[in-house]
Amino acid sequence: MPSALEAINLHFHDLRREAASRWLEGGMSLIKVKAWLGHRNISQTSTYLADAIEECDDRALQRSATASGNHSTETAPMVLDPNSGTRNSAEKPALH
Image 1: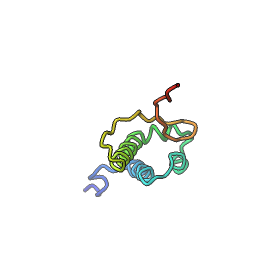
Image 2: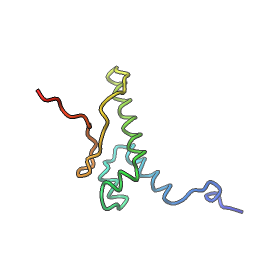
Image 3: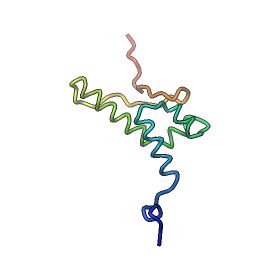
Image 4: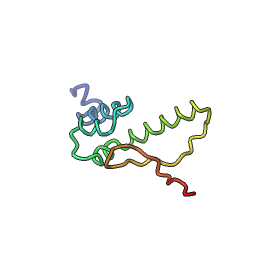
């Protein structure tokens, strides 16, 4: 007879990824998540949590649009700066 964890096919890394995703959702910086996961570089963490990062960005965009009364969610895509671990707009500033 399989154990409860075997029955739902749950593994240690599933729990680890869930925890890291929740840390991001809670506002923890990607750099701190990287340190807690023990990753050597930020690109490893951003690859590991790509879906969670995108989901956090989508939720933040929705909250921002709702707060400003603008219900359009079309903005410049966000990119991860591998040096700092921060997300920045991919849109280049206009030159005047």
